[in-house]
Image 1 (tube, rainbow, N blue to C red):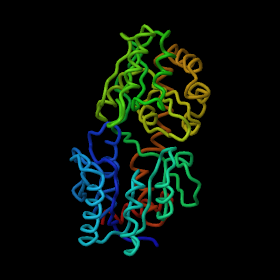
Image 2 (image 1 turned 135 degrees about the vertical axis):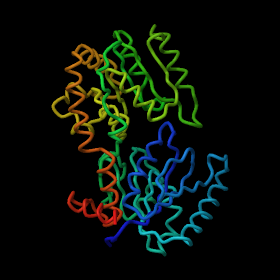
Image 3 (image 1 turned 45 degrees about the horizontal axis):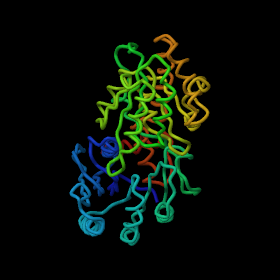
Image 4 (image 1 turned 45 degrees about the vertical axis):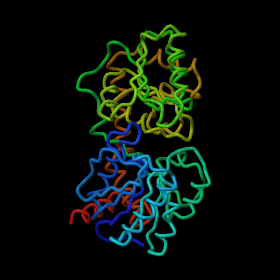
Length: 371
């Protein structure tokens, strides 16, 4: 059923922290949805620095306080019952939180509050299957970024802050610098980049760190590999960075690399493209963005060391103007297909009607929200 007027939204979120290394962007997403809503109440697994709109409240189940899992379950139900007693909600949006969607469904269903679950990852689980069952709709960036087959899926694109992630005012060229932004984990293939770049005349910057609670063995293996390859003085491990620091690294770099496998439609690649960087990818889901530069910017597989090396050698041999022109084309595609404000309108449309509205309808919804 279509919903008239500004939405009254309940939002489940994994981490609500403007400074978080990986999930800091969710604050921007929440704030992009806020103008379309009368109010948003966020129930999050973990909270940090809050920087949300005035009509947004955030409630945490306490992982940042060290609460045990059983206590977090109790906190979830205590907070959810309290919110349902205090306010009426038109819809529930579970962002990368299939667990909360499943846990909350028994309380939301009797009140006829439909759940829409956002999920972009290749990992399948019973929890995700259950979340799909209890959700009215599931949404993802592209069809391949949701791992289950379902008629409920609507692909909306990603939500990149194209104001924050923008090209530098002056083209960077010295020294040649290759950047990869990702958690330090084998699935991101940082070791492949190091092996590919070893004989090339360039610096390598690995932006990111090991995820909280995970082993640091891979990070130490990477540092050992830089020494074995004789490139320790050319490789920078930045550790955890804020979104603004990540943007600054992009703007000081020459080429970006993203080696996420199929199924991981990595927003880091889109951020690099938004900054006007020629970006090498191994996932065919980016083909609509790379367009005429497909052969130049795609490698055959995320572990293709030789292929990556040849692509890097070609891009680094281009003139700054040639690379700038490639970057401009990539940025135009990201702004058109994956920028934040259009995504927010699409999400609101699905929450209202279950479908993605035409641009004209989206404008009507925006007018409703402003009244």
